[in-house]
Image (cartoon, rainbow, N blue to C red; front, side, top):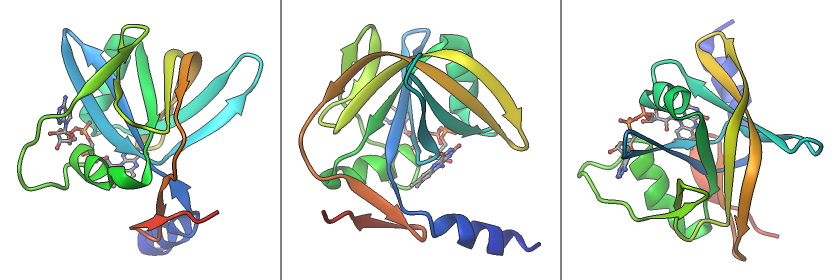
Length: 153
Ligand code: FAD
């Protein structure tokens, strides 16, 4: 099967957008990701999937902890920044929760420690056990067919 057909099919699944954050040896690293889902209530588990070529992979492995930050509608530029899609380098501002850097103004900051990991083709799946959560009101940033979109309720 053609890779483009697979990509197009996956693009039909409308998602929100997250930035995964972690800190290793005092250096904060962020990466945009939409491969995120809730997995279990007891224990509280979530899942992310990271490309094996991404710098984020080793950083999470080393840190053992990460945060999933669900972006608000007005955070498209942050999504582009942490996907390496902006031409110029920009500073980012972070808060801390339970010792982990998180994105300011996100709709949800979900702090996790690695529960399990599993190599899956050219990605690695991390199950994260949730240790801390902070929530804000607002509209989410959406992603559909490879483009940012609004999610209207
Ligand atoms: P880099 O490419 O080096 O870093 C990413 C960018 O973030 C760079 O521009 C860097 O300057 C910036 N940055 C990092 N840390 C900081 C900091 N502390 N301060 C300021 N800027 C910083 N890939 C996946 O593996 N899984 C997914 O689920 C996934 N979903 C995606 C969803 C969307 C909507 C998009 C647009 C991309 C997605 N990607 C996903 C692709 C992924 O975001 C990019 O390939 C990303 O560039 C990989 O990051 P990296 O860890 O290799 O680090």
